[in-house]
Image (tube, rainbow, N blue to C red):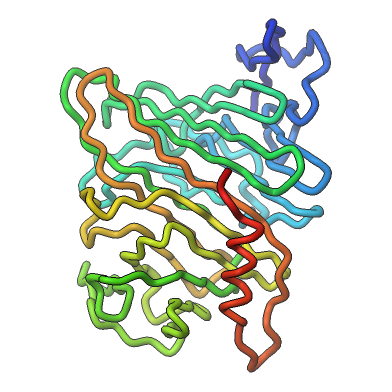
Length: 336
């Protein structure tokens, strides 16, 4: 475990070293360094309703995204303070993970996925996390997080920077673990490639293009995932640019992101969204970006914007009012 030094500048505070923990000035309103979940160097963004806690020490991820004290992210007991050590055990971190793909062809990149990042407070309500320059992939990742001062709106922008001497092709891949047991609501768009609005990844790497599962249905132009399906990994080709995940704690987790119908999506099935819904305590919510072809020195960014809205989970046997939910998203989860 280690602590970060905090240094002052004319425009704000920066996390700038791996030394003893000391502050040379009070942190700006909305952003500060805190201890959380076994880490002494977390960066926190906070307003009256929302708390976001970021972890540079282990994978550059989001540990907490909470409204009124209720965390939407899956954060299990037993992983507190875990740090990556090369050559030691492999580990799958929890909570708000981000990554790059395509999943099946990218080189292993534990330094990006698990390793130590640097952190910087960049403004009153913003934080930047920066990875090492990774030799396996030839890129460096930069993640900028900005919390709206008055709402749950959290902008998450990941930048891929080619630090190698050859052209690289990657895509943004979000891998957020939310609290399990909720209902996914994904608007469908036309025309679509997948006959049922989604594909299911089965055993032996087979992708089922006409799956049927009692936990998944199409209703009123939406794909609903009501619980754990027969096989957990699902992929969608929707170009709506948003989806919602309604949890039993009466929070609706909304993600908005740009979609590009005329660009190449280089996951195996050309996905814009993936949901991994195991029979367990988490559900993975995954916006996927288009292929970025980067010459040496070039960068590309992808932004997903999050909200936590108050929405009642349906009683047993009842259904979500999909039109009401969609109207709520349109009214309360708007991009600026």
